[in-house]
Image (tube, rainbow, N blue to C red; front, side, top):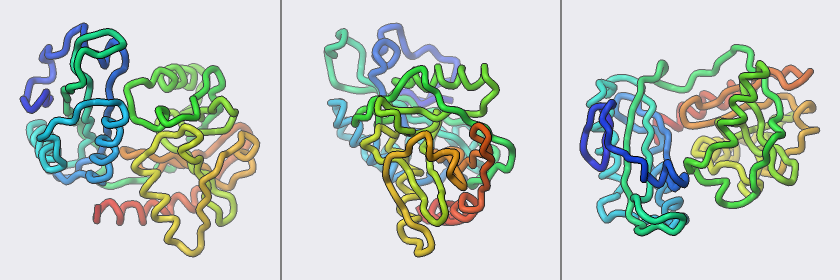
Amino acid sequence: MVNFNGELLPKDSTFLNHENRGLRYGDSLFESLRSINGRLFFWEDHYFRLMASMRMLRMEIPMDFTMEFLQEQIQQVVAANSLDESAARVRLTVFRNEGGRYLPRTNTISYTIEAKALEHSFYVLSDGAYEVELFKDFWLNPDILSTLKTNNKIINVVGSIYARENGYDNCLLLNQRKAVVEALNGNLFLVKGNTIKTPPLTDGCLNGILRQKLTEIVAKLEHYELEESSISPFELQKADELFITNSIIGIRPITKYRKKQFTAVVAKDLLGKLNAAARLG
């Protein structure tokens, strides 16, 4: 079942048409989050990111779009798909209503909510091989629009095809200043000694919820030093660890970049702390 503007519909229903602005112009935002037994991981953070992004894109926020209302709508979809006693991946999509061309006829919005099963209730660290390469065909813009979770993900699509065609598990994206910004599906962290480094939002990386949570966790740990600064491609092969974060996978260690093999000692240490934060939040 899918929720469209508060109405539960079968997944094969036709409820969007060719004039949808998300389809035509990418005039849309989305949030991906975990639900465990009907409880949403870091829901407050996802909600406030969505509200801030909608304001930035001049979307009109409905009066009933409270945190409690949307949480209830999500939980209804989870239950309708018989996932309220297991782990689920939820996607909440918001798009400006149809009408107009580049200039919208209205700033009112519609939304959809969908849910699919996940294998694990909490974040689990994969120990399999995971090789990455730089994707250099196209660059990210180092601006605030790149930090939003919009439907404009064509660079991620083309980069994913490039990775598959060349036998990589993922690719790392560069901005126009040639700094390493993020992976195709999440934020990037680099570990060198006791320093944990991640690109700043000013480099154009996604303002990820897991990125926020891990930076908060690391900042409180005395034996690590957090650094938000640009990462050059030359730093990658000098790192002890590289890992990717997003709200669905949690932490995904990178095992190989070119000739360099990486450990996952810090990633394993942080995973337990991240799961503890998820239980509380």
